[in-house]
Image (cartoon, helix red, strand yellow):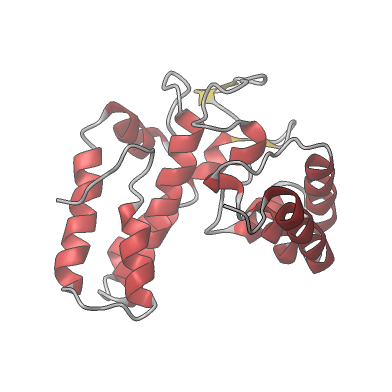
Amino acid sequence: ELPKGPMTGNHVIPIIVDSYLKGIRGFDSALAYRAMNSALISASETPDFSAYKKQGYVPSRYSESVTQTVEYAYNDWTLAQFASRVMNRETESKAFLERSFNYRNLFHSPTIFLLPRNENEFLLEPGNRGFKEGDKWSYSMFVPHNPRDLINLMGGDEDFATKLDSALARQYIVFDNEPVLHVPYLFNYSNHPNLTQKWVRHIMSSHYNSAP
């Protein structure tokens, strides 16, 4: 049985997949795949993940619904890679891959955010409800497995880059927690590598130093 940890999602899965695909293979891949699959089967017994599988998202009645949805979708994508590239189980990989797009079900096009949702009702001003240690700005950018699709949802290269550049300039996204550390690199995927360079340099100089 794999440990789940205190956070949302099942992030031991991407750790195992990433390690294996990068050449760390001193373990039984078939056993690892069964364990990762088992972790999701066990998660299915919980009300939030059961709803995620049935409805395609975690409903807003769960306090961390958006965070759970985007992280479950990421976990699905990572397991799809292992199923296909390591185990040659294309049917299973396809099922995980299809589910990895579930973040789309929380996309509210009028506001261009991922928001807490229950049926057809979105919570437009959620504050921190629906999120774990974050808000709509930080978790609307959490689609690390499909940044191109996220950019397209948000209007394409120019609209996305303008929105994100403005958000960073206004400090709507605070670099104090791991779920946003990838954010400045998203400019690369919107064909604005200059903005990645600008913001990585700024964040490095303003948030980090060599002191203890």
